[in-house]
Length: 352
Image 1 (cartoon, rainbow, N blue to C red):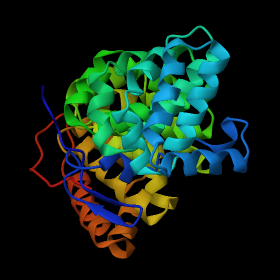
Image 2: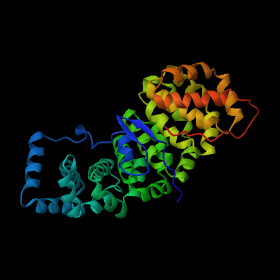
Image 3: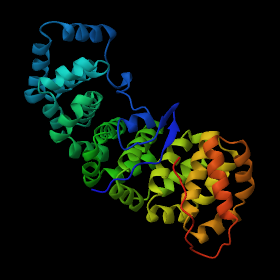
Image 4: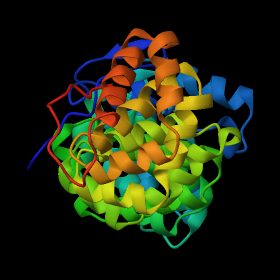
């Protein structure tokens, strides 16, 4: 399996130099436990559950819930899944207890239910359990990936969002990334990025960012039409998705298929506009993408020059962040070289 590290960058106040290691997806965008309004419950019920789980007989209580998941009626299974979800929402020790008492496989089985609400409850409980690093490998090895992908396709809007977030968590184990891609997740995440609500778009972009550190998933994403929604979201400064979309694009442009699709979808004018009027962070990542696009293509350089990129690049080289200044200077020098089709450019450091 061929791996490529995402480009280095600073995001959300933290610097990342090797994003193939560690919890890079959560650093890119927070993907938290489920929203509190997804299930009707009362604060007294939540307190009762938490107190019970902290007691000496908490394992017995969890085992009773697991037994209901395995053999109860649909309504009883919903209640049990809801209680497990509540217990797993905020406390790591509860997540470990729940997994240790055998809840993961019965929860996975709920994802195949024809009852969409029960399926949603199962997805949400698995998401909460996946927030504990110690549970990720067990969830994946118990067969959760394909059912989560199926929920991403057929579930409710909330189930799709939570399935995307759960797949993101599982993708933080490196060997799961290719397995998730091969299970059909990439086209469904691209569809969620394009058609979902804001939370769906955010979770989809974060999952795609993590999954596309694997080359084969970059190709899948491009073949699934990811470039169109990425360019549209980057062009819409009111979407609150400019940064996230640009970061996803930054991991894709290392493959020629993505660069060709970016040009075809009209990405160059959008990137030049961001260099001109975007935030400092947006300018930095956009100039790095343009540099990658132009470093070995005279054709692309011509297109960038025709879009009027040199004046904003010169301005950025004088007033941007240190890294943006360096990228802008390198790209400006490259654009001022003779342009005659595809030519090899001097090697340059285009990491973000």
